[in-house]
Picture: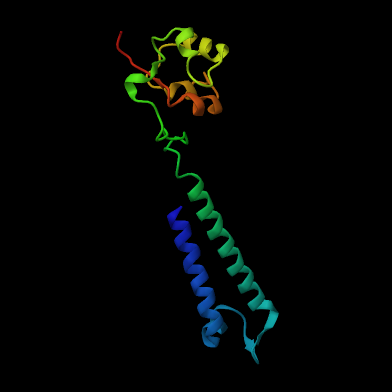
Length: 149
């Protein structure tokens, strides 16, 4: 991503430098005649510069949008998450205990109990036990302990 942004910035810089220097413009584009380019070379250069700016904007927007997710694309745990000792263990909790979690429904709690054991709470999402929307709601309230309690 960073390399693409660098290439686009360099291309934009070259286009702007070439438009100021007639000799370089003649080398990279078509001949210049009395301040106007023949065959639309300047128009082509300006279109390329506009495309470079648009691509740079898209790259920056994509980077800003994905900053709050980890390498798997899953949102990170929020700052308002409960302490680990207060979370519900998805490997050992009953359906009734799971239903105390905000956003949990009886059907999702039943699926969590049915498909045990889990190595981590991300297994809920990776194995399709819950949807990403449900996972976003419950991720701060669950934990997966592997040892017996």
